[in-house]
Length: 144
Image (cartoon, rainbow, N blue to C red; front, side, top):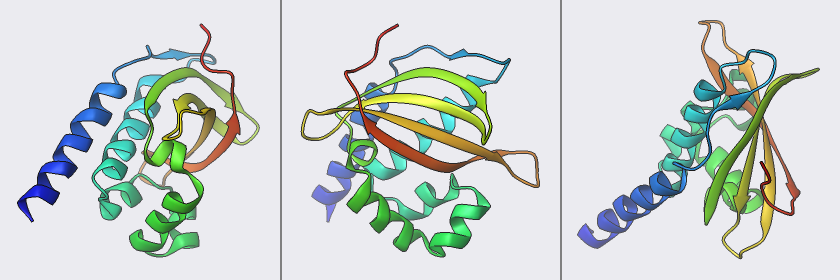
């Protein structure tokens, strides 16, 4: 049991180190630092398999769709390995789109393949921002 806890803490520390790369850049006057912090915190929760914490960063619309933290985490494990267990993470631009604010995140997945994860955000009733979606596509990697 202690070894499992240690592995989770080590994984969280490794993800924390990975997430330090990338400066906050935005277009359209968005607070890209806030969006990046939300993504970083969710990835830290993924690293420790903390379904409740990971689910807490999801918008109300996603919470209704997946209903429980466990269902949400299983969907991420099966369909979003590059953001669930990234080898590296670099933040790109934030910008306003037709669907609302988005944040580019360049990740290298667990098998060494490069991906662009485009996160969308939705403002909640309390004024906070939460992740409303993540679209993954292959990428050649980050370029400034």
